[in-house]
Length: 173
Image (cartoon, rainbow, N blue to C red; front, side, top):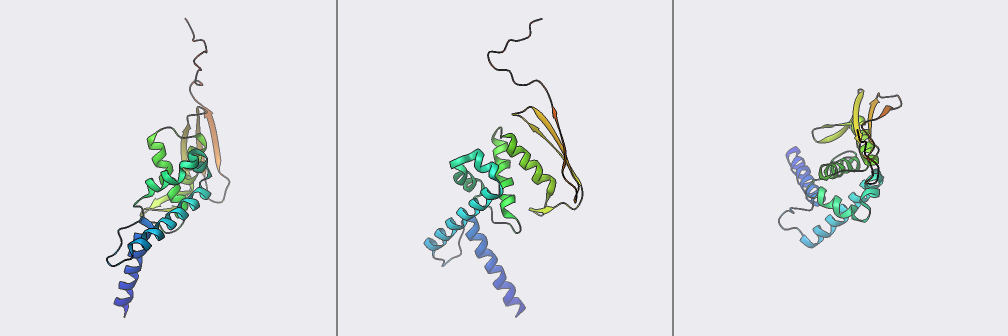
């Protein structure tokens, strides 16, 4: 009996994984129905992520659904707070592709201070965490310390020179 339950549980997990990842579907499945269900789940996944990461929605605007779907394609839903993890994945891809807004960079820092990856999942940190982020738009370096049970401690330091406009005079020696 236990073997049959384990097999059924494994089949159910494979079914859900294929739905959330958009395939591949098991033989004999109603492909049209599976694709439609998969698209609905993907749309819900993006909506949930957008609520957890309003900075992504602000930055990407109308292209959020398309970009998130492309980045998350083939990535099965994770257990736990998948919206936070999905947002971190999408934000990481954006960061790798080029500059991102300071607000998004700060949000990533906050998530990384509160969570760490364990076996591919985001898990709350039980111990203090220290992190840094360089904010390109404002030319500031932020250092933050999170100690469980206490408010987040942070300091922001201006670094380098502010960006010059094309018309600003240059120093001549």
